[in-house]
Length: 191
Image (cartoon, rainbow, N blue to C red; front, side, top):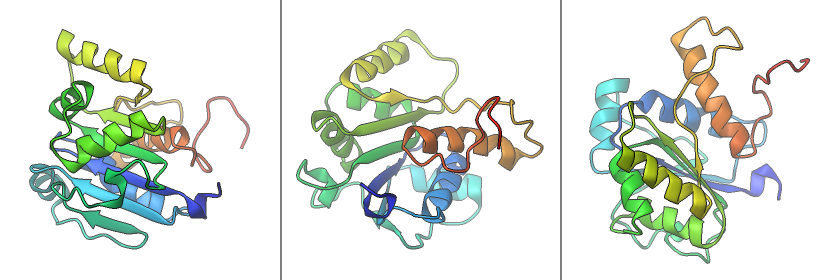
């Protein structure tokens, strides 16, 4: 499947780290061959956190499209949809725990359940530290179910010079995991 035919879901929860979501969405929408759709879903508190941390409301630009978290009529609430990847960034531990427990009480959790049951790619980016045992066990359950846990832990191999550069080390890793790593830094590889 070419990138231009792919459909991606980006879920943003109430965890701190809206800058990761903003950079991820911006990057997905400006790829050389962007997905045909980037479906964006905010949890109940995520928009408030976004506005506090980013300083402005989210405004989707094509190919991004917003969906309400209580809209179970969204196409990706069903396994018959053609969305192939879901990225939850940042992910609160509450959302992670509900998904691990099989609780599909909102669109984010239902879409994650669909990704797992259909054996599609689910990338969860927790932005929490430190982890307690419940967090670790929930991440273990999700890993065993097929999800990829990618903590929002920046790397410094590329010698980032700005906060945006540091944020992009995480976003680039997410994009690589999702199959879009065209311009990402790769350790000890020639340009």
